[in-house]
Length: 334
Ligand code: TXA
Ligand code: MG
Image (cartoon, rainbow, N blue to C red; front, side, top):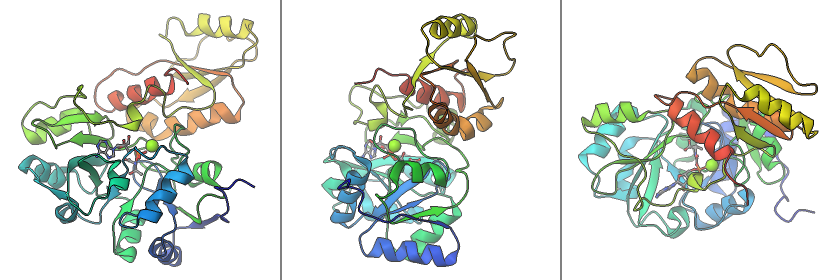
């Protein structure tokens, strides 16, 4: 038996009885997978070291990676952080509850386990009603990374969580599709000027507008973000980025090597396709694409494709986050 899979996993519709059960499980130090507006999270009591350790074990995640602490309301950042700047309060006011994580200087409440030993902590107030109900029923704060095995594609549906963590979590709350479909934007406010460590549902343009100042990207001084490893958010199949002009020629070349190819296509379909190649349609708008992207990457694996070919979207607004995740999915594997 898998030593990390001793649990019987229940998948329940997120009604009030299931929410109460989730709170009980969190109080006793066990784990619950639950929906957020970005992706599903694997939650544990952020103040219980054993619970946070179990999160790392269930995900197969290295211990030096920090996890985000989810709070019921913005005011609670005072408990977890210190030296909170006016920029942080402005962003909280504008984007919380919602898909934004702020990295702030940690208070003693944030343990080394939660922060991965950094002197900062990642904090977020999620807007998903089910997550909010669980936070209130539980009464504490919830440490929650995405509910996938380390390095894999994040889950945007309860069934995805089951595929990733069956036997590794006691309860999965089904709250339907995650609305945004990509992980939260992470903005570092612990340094001299704000920097985006991971693009997401809240765009750099929106953040700059609220702060009335330009916002930088990651720098050499930026803290480590596991999502910034070369390969992350990756399906089993190899992902290749191609220009739309080269899509068909590349599909033909790979099919000649007897590889099963999936073409992830937005807009017009090519007139002809190599035999055996599959087409998976991607939605037209960036919001719809973000919502569907991870489900499509999982479909590539379910269909046992060897390679997925995809074209990057234009990089403005939400397109920045979509392109970031596709580059990571296509990044070199170990
Ligand atoms: O949308 C999301 O953020 C989802 C949902 C569940 O809230 N969570 C999520 O967590 O994506 P995770 O652990 O898969 O990714 C969080 C990222 C990691 O790359 C981690 O390194 C980074 O946030 N992070 C957390 N705390 C940090 C800190 N103090 N400094 C820098 N990066 C931090
Ligand atoms: Mg993750």
